[in-house]
Length: 524
Image 1 (cartoon, rainbow, N blue to C red):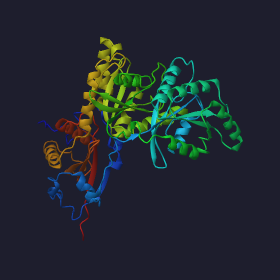
Image 2 (cartoon, one colour; image 1 turned 180 degrees about the vertical axis):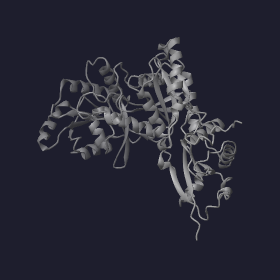
Image 3 (cartoon, rainbow, N blue to C red; image 1 turned 135 degrees about the horizontal axis):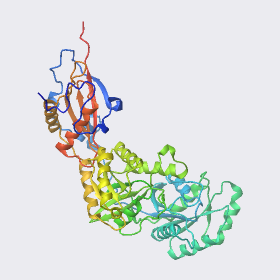
Image 4 (cartoon, rainbow, N blue to C red; image 1 turned 90 degrees about the vertical axis):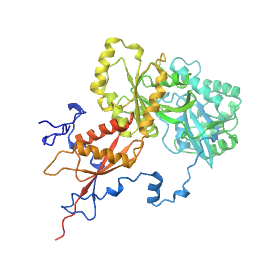
């Protein structure tokens, strides 16, 4: 006689999971012990197996406001600042390559946000940061180095810098005092005069008083007083910021906060087409694109309107190595990419359709799952594959991407615009799954059916039971199961699969945490 139980109690050595292949099986040592918390329940002894202390909780709906009140917060006094519509002035930071623009940005921010390395050309796109000084908030736009008669990628970098000049309310023109004013600087001055914007001259790399005389020589540019500063050490930065605040207009031109639009991080290997996808979605060249891998270094935020809905896309640096194996600006770029992912709501992982899936692709997917973000798989460069490659690709997806079978998939071409109309529906589906909440009553009715039809196998003469379950949070959906014993990894995966079948959860990882009950010894 055969049983329809997918996890047989006779399989003492291993748990058989009908929903996962043998390649997915992992022993219980792989389970994160931090998620298993042992709790003691008052009044329980060894013969209390038929008592369920959580029976009166099964019909209780989880309410976020009630949780806050239970933690001692006065929810009536909780205010959520809504400054999405606040307009801030824009400050563009302009200069030749390697004069210290990104270092100045970090000095103003008070933290290492912009990627800095002692080689020219690290910054390439226009990267926006929010700064504050003496109660005045403003947006800073860090730009790549401007060069006259630039060609190739350098020409795109210069074009982005010029655009930042004309869109800004105030311009900080940064020069290297140790070099002095060059012919290229003179060309920048001519360009700045055409913009008719307020310009503040920053004489950078004046580390001590010996450089003040060199800074004074910059009066010859005709832009007013040069402010002698050391971006690296902070010398003179206070006086510079006082002058900047004085030059800012009373009303800004750009919105401040990214809270409104949904945040989408574009991730993938170098040269997979992230920047091209962003430009295609925007309908214009928002970021620098080049055939050379590693063009993007800093994460670039861009607001893009698609079918009347505004999204905030974050173009990130391509991840070619593990973070601890990278060096130089690649190391910091990897950290910034991880930070951009943590701030995002949904991650779009771009994969090359015409090339075999690599270990780096799966590593990036694992990073997204661990971050708990919603996920969309975008197979780019679909215009380059033929029928034979399509058949091989389907096999690779089935073999290598089984752990993210729940993620929406779109086959696109950022170059030609193929299937771009399917991109936003995939984002919406993933975000909807990411924010799905199951009521406590429905969840426990579901768990009761699971336990009745497919109980956990007996281990050591004991059969662990699920006493009570609740969904603790969304974004991502996180469930807490209160059990009488430890649930093995295969059974937890079985529960996850059944949760997806019953409630959807498309495009989102699911976290299942355990609270294991221990019984107190009978008093003698």
